[in-house]
Length: 306
Image (cartoon, rainbow, N blue to C red; front, top):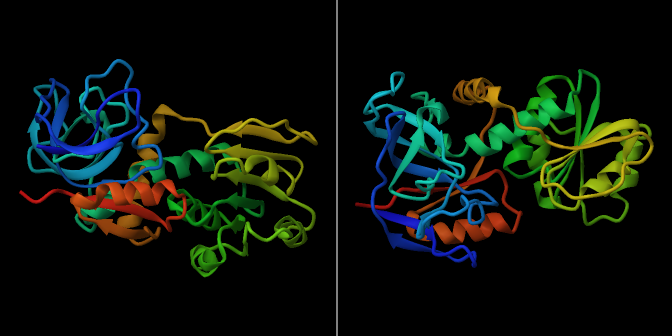
């Protein structure tokens, strides 16, 4: 089968190669990948001590073509959304992928494969962010880098809870963020953006979500005393004014929340935004676009032609 692979552990080079279709274990399924999501870390997330060439990728959607003997809740022919993060048998950037049955989500008929592939990573990260922020109706939230796939979900999830949302992005994305529920938008190129947020929030927001790297410290400066800063991409900086600074947590029980998010998207209660769907042969173009961190919503890639 064709797959996008890392060729070795010492470089981050990715190329298309012909590799063997992976074999399944008793609790795994083989999925014919119809589309896969493009993530900022896809070329870097590989298991330690893995064999090369290694198919990259963390999320996708497709049809089950084979099931292991211990798989009871899914059958051949089922349409599924799945994750393959750090799987030793390879990731989703391939014609076929293996995943454990616990990483499968039934895909509603109302969703296309492209839509399904765009949900798992950004959706789970958005839900984990909301859990870590722990905000209530009437609170205020600033999102640094709000126009990407994660921010697209967080704006909607927060607004639905009655949280007042502000976000930063380049100026061409401000109308887009407002259409999702953001009440205030600022351009991170504007040297006075912090002043604008402080004026809007009457002296500081309840919490900030720093999605983009190196935005945690600047975000903390517009959080009120004893507020909270949650970082998605990490970064070290000293907390001030009794502000809590944490990286988003990860919980084993988040699968149910992701399943509900998938259903809400299928029911048009949450908007899923795909900026572009690339053909398989242009997968590296999609990866490079995502790595610029200037994508609006999500990018996906469709399966190779037979």
